[in-house]
Length: 243
Image (tube, rainbow, N blue to C red):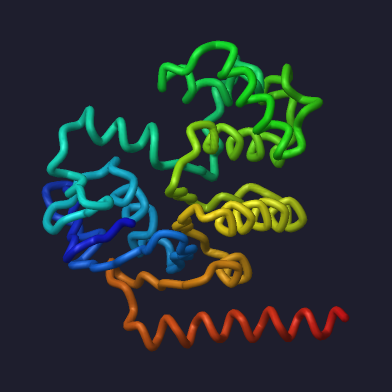
């Protein structure tokens, strides 16, 4: 579905070039669920923004299907983001003066969907995330977990094929985090492709594949497989001890 081909990204800081990603190559197939982990400053969020068409590479190519993403015009990339990619952020990015229903309607308005269809879809999605009784509540009237569920409903409004999640449970308690991860797993089971950045190894263990970024580079496959196996082993041991 999407691939990075020898991608490097550099930023200028006080006149010096700082390398966030160094020649990264990565393929994410349709239906995959990839977790990207690594220390702070390793390039995880930069990688996600490149995949989402929000940050052009210094060198290399980002391919979305048959398209070279950054050879497209800004308007063409915006159309891909609007119709094919869903974003989940740690900070939710809800509009504070809009209700839950209106927040979910925002991407539908931008896509030119009729008002009645906007409302129908938004109500259905909020029902799916368990917020049918919170349609008219503004973000300040919702718990942190409820705000993230509104953000998830909004992300699904235009039925994206690819979901990019940047620390989606970073501000949530363990129980709410588990619920969000279960929901992402359901979306993946439905065929949606997911790339998620997280610092939590337990959450990464819910993904089908784990990649570790270190100093802007992806670890060799054998190290990533070992990491995935270690996470799975830890989760299995916890489950046995709990039972």
